[in-house]
Image (cartoon, rainbow, N blue to C red; front, side):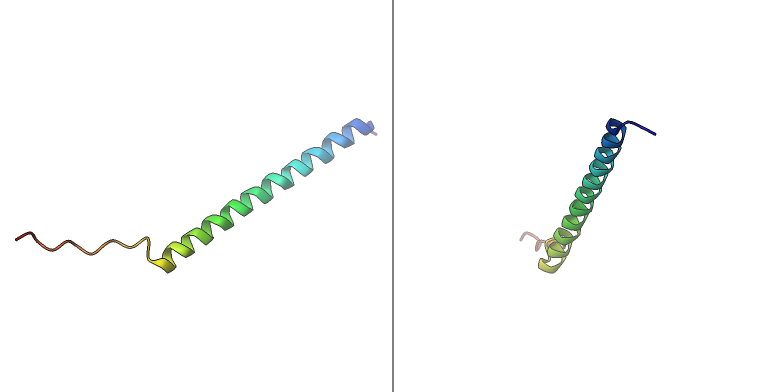
Length: 54
């Protein structure tokens, strides 16, 4: 069996992995929300062409 310090390190590594996973999930969710808002507001569309100069 390992020492208590070994188990502590394993628990901390697992907790760090969960935190990183959660952070990446939140960032991806935020990116999806921003893209949805852009699409809803029409920010991603091309502007109409300018009329020719006279």
